[in-house]
Image 1 (cartoon, helix red, strand yellow):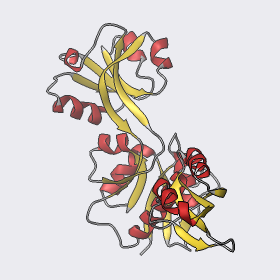
Image 2 (cartoon, one colour):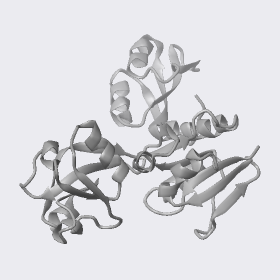
Image 3 (cartoon, one colour):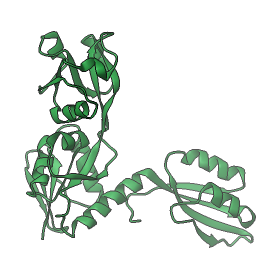
Image 4 (tube, one colour):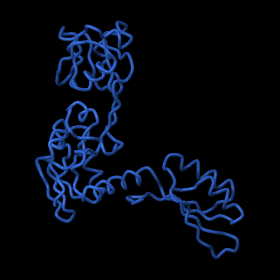
Length: 281
């Protein structure tokens, strides 16, 4: 049975989703006008859809899985669930209003809130016992206050420069931290999905780790292993030089340069870092 996967056709998630699928060994479209692509070698068919619609197709069982934003998944109310986060497309949702006018969530009682994510905002307000009117607007919601349509907005905030230009400021706690996620419809996923998930996971791990090789005297090996224990432990091989061994170990990419310094300081030499393109753990 061919696995049917939804991919964002445009927007901030589209390019990164396509890249992670390519790195996972799947064919991807070369023309942005293509709506579907069959990867017969891997028995997968990709459908390029509006990011906002993907959770609905997956939740209804029309497609087996998809990549979309956590915000879009939660806002849709679809019967789909998050399998794993994908580490790109990160954003934060905040309430914002005229600078200095509001300071907390309780200030929203009885106000009009404009947002592109009604489901997310209404759920947040309900969970905190705040009664307010939420109106869906697509596009630049920050103008809704100036036009008298809303008192407050709820929107994605990155640098905050757009809000400041409109005389607005964020307040209260973060509504939602979103990023790209892999989703399925619970309990109805084909067996082949596990292969797909493992490939994606392998690329994500490969992006987060590097392979480190170094030579060290056996007398200092225990200390070196304490500094760099690896995912499953280091691979240790004898060297032609008496009393020395060669070590290979996976280490987090973040902090790898500092780790090289620490290993060098205890006697490691010929220390090399190599990118990992994919893996299975």
